[in-house]
Length: 196
Image (cartoon, rainbow, N blue to C red):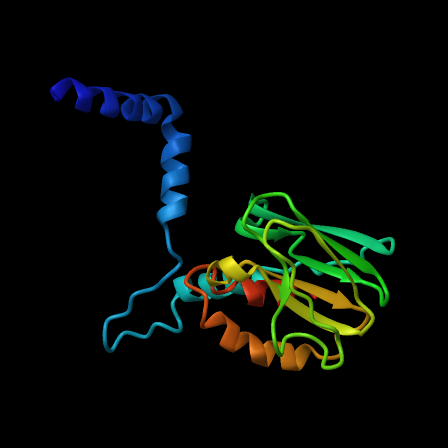
């Protein structure tokens, strides 16, 4: 039993020794949280640390997406992608009225389906079968939020803007209810909508 522990711990020690400072910095950066703890009676709003944190928070700029070229667009349904786990890729896309979206089942156990109340009022809903590709042509202008039915709790959602975002205020309002059903990635919907 002692030898088994040695075989497990040795590679971890070697990893730390050989990666040295880089490993330590990566670990510290990952575990560091930009928080400030204040004792009762202490002025937390005027400290230099507070102003540094405010500068950090305001310096994050969300990159807006551009109109996707062409009239046919492909969105992959993935277990893992650039944006994380259980994801549509691209997760946010802007297209023109009348464009067709092809949802491709790259990984198993995924589908694409509209969410009630999270698309233009007169738009046609869709619901693909698990493990199958589905293509939809979007004729109504506005924002559509869709999901993977079995993985919506993991925030496997996507956003399509067709033409102008004429219904964005209704979508943002409805997103609060959707967020409450997520067990992970709860800020994903906000991040996606901010890209429009």
